[in-house]
Length: 115
Length: 117
Image (cartoon, rainbow over all chains, first blue to last red; front, side, top):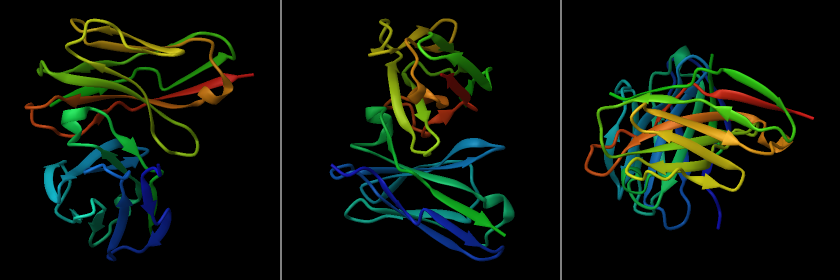
């Protein structure tokens, strides 16, 4: 069974641009969560989607948004990029909402660099 | 809000030794999960072990075991017979259980574990 797939793996953007990251969960998994990983702040929860609905959202500005499609694939979007958005963005999937199973499977991440 | 604290930024041990990574947490929740995740240099986060708060018995997975002290809010990871492949960042993480209003995983800052040959 294929794992969680994130694309692109690496990307470089300039300030003010926007970016869209994609995540394909493990087949059969209906929940997708997103995390931001930076050296300074560590790993921080962005949001969770389950059955195309945003279940939870972390403490991030409205520039960070996401969605989930009927096939459970998810995208996250960051608009008006700032230098501080440079990070590794991790996607995780689970069978049901993470709070119900307590177990997440992570992808390898998308490394975003903002210049 | 929950907090997770890992007080050891880096640890180094010899291959085959036993090593214990520390983690403390703070929460007012009664229903929750605790995890140890491993992030090797390739970056993919891998679940090492999971503990449900309502279970008194400590979780074990092969060479990995935890010492869960609920009253002390402590959740340490013991790696026995350490191997070179255990070299990675280890993150302790907390998640509220069902009905508690899930906020995703709350991670500690991580411990960089280096296994020396």
